[in-house]
Length: 137
Image (cartoon, rainbow, N blue to C red; front, side, top):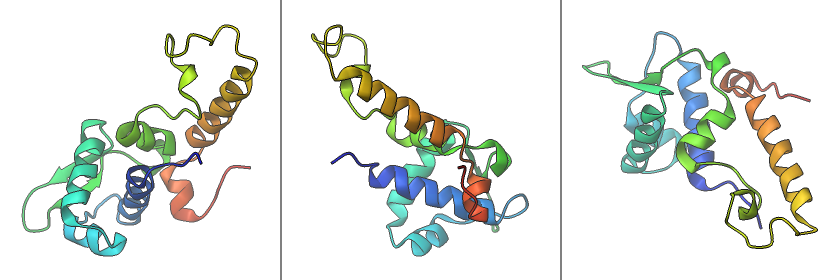
């Protein structure tokens, strides 16, 4: 079964939570952890990856926590998944040199097409779309 890992799913939901308090608010790792029923340490791991990708910033102080680094309309699901999972591929043969049969494989075109469809969906869906419950057709 091909699946997006918990890292990708939690990170995407965390970003939707942060969108709900954007632009003026922030959420602590404890608030996010409670909302997602995960440990604060796991939230910290995910936010570190999201921060390195320039998607969230940390806010110091009493009202501190995490907030979106930019408007939710400009952050895509693709941005999030790439930050915490790397490239999304339905089959590893998309990576050059990964498979000796890549040039002659009769099934490779379907895996390539699936990857393109997923990337198009993920790159056309923003955090703002998810926060509003609006999804691309």
